[in-house]
Length: 148
Length: 264
Image (cartoon, rainbow over all chains, first blue to last red; front, top):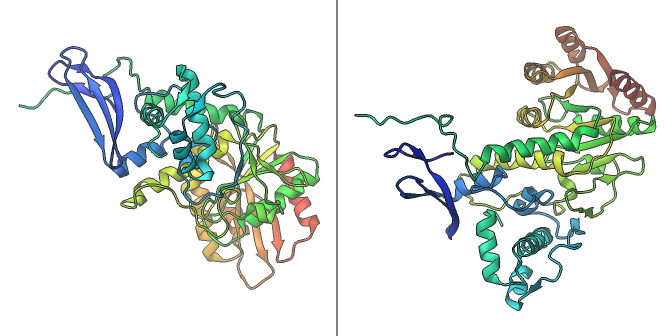
């Protein structure tokens, strides 16, 4: 998927992504010549299709978690399916605000370990000392976690 | 006056999304993970109820008894039975930084299956919009197959048996994901109806450059009449590897394992 600024005959460049709600995925692209910005909006089904391909529009900055799609998308998984050893060293020194802990506690057990690790990796990568709901929202948008 | 629009491939400027690169990386991850697997064997029939999983499990056990290192990937996500057939105890899956440990039977068979992940008695369901789920569900199942191949720490295996569901779609997904086409073990029951379904599946596999090892005829000596295995063998120029009766002895499976081992 690429965008062409027909007027300038230039390939538009990815600018940013957002999850504005209602299952919409928004990806903005800018023309490097004239500066015009267009946004691609997907409906929930199309958002799901993108997630199912395991690709991130706008690229990815963190390494994939093992079975990221299965753990993130299966709705009927056993709560205790995984013995999560994934927190070793990840995000060491990073703390969670009370609100962030409450929000994490609402994530189904099947996927909670992976979600926690993704946020810790994200915080560590960016030098964030405390994970808050706002950090979680930003991470979710930046990392392309449409399904989570 | 129509616009003069270039093609996708004409646009070659650096793309931060790198979607193609992400897909290539996914394929590379599968190839890297399977680099220590000597052979992938797809167990297929194109027909439901012929005993693919039963044959897969019996063969895996016989391979293990004969000293070969075997793994089983249960690719039947909607009706996974391999853990039960292999007698795997219920256990949690151990996660590492970049992989998940397969379950291991007392005979040393490494196994991964959706049955290890799903709540008892619940079907495989995905989170997502209900509307038009048929559009994305197939893509999610294909992604699950990719992750089963790429993210399970299979280790060094002589044979990775892939137990396929009925139909040909999962086989097509498998061949697209693997770095090279798999070997194929076709399973049929004696009936002409089964023969016809297996014929289509085998033809599809050969069209995709898979190597057919032969045919296993299951449920022989029971109520199902016919000579499907012989007819398929003659048509495709492949051997009948085994005829499995209703209550097979260990010797039957051992003989099949020996033949499979010889072809490896």
